[in-house]
Amino acid sequence: MIGKRFLNAVANSRVDVLQVFLDILRKAGSRYCLIGGIAVNAYVEPVVSLDLDIVIAGQNLENVCRAAAKKGFKIQRYEHSVNLTLAGSDLRIQLQTDSRYQDFILRARAKKVLGYRVKVAAVEDVLKGKTWAYLDETRRSSKRQKDLADIIRLVEVYPALRRRLTTEIKKLLLLTLSDVQLHSASQEDRLLVFFPGVILFFLNLVLRSPKIPLTNIA
Image (cartoon, rainbow, N blue to C red; front, side, top):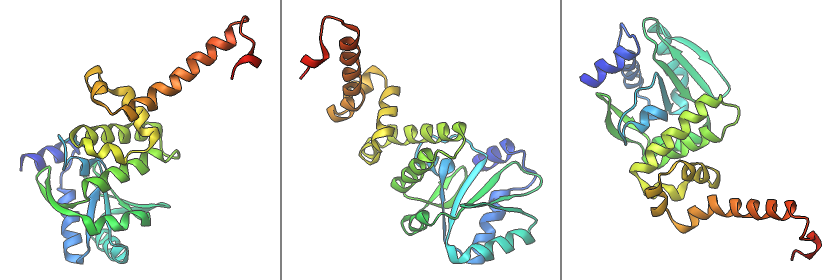
């Protein structure tokens, strides 16, 4: 109950929007799972977010939206999402309509998040979704930085997830590691950061030195 009160206080909610929406899903008989930042909270130390990302079974989307509209939700449709808000709360519910997320529902498990018993995507799928979000260059920079922070939160608690990261994200994560963490990183991961830097160092050295003809470099 403390988690629920805290979330609703942060969202300035006069009504428990999340519980209202969960009741809608239950009555509609729709399968679903949480993804995004609040789903990350199911696996690591929680950080409150006003954005609630949910995947619902595609065939149930319109029924759920109609039921939500009857409850007073404002519905806005975008290319890959349907966004729902309710007067009296700052909480934003985003229904992810990108078909890549549908399989997440099959692997979801019931977990307690901020006082709510909900279906949450598997930790590997939460990471995958966060990776897709971070690599989406159409998203605002501030949103992508939050995605990266969530990825860091996950791999700190579940180091085995590191092998699922893209090369680009591995480089960014290594740049944020402490000396102790960097020492424990794999040799392959460390090379992702250091090897390009070594090449650039020597290339600059050669280009700045008039004594070494470039034609003599093998």
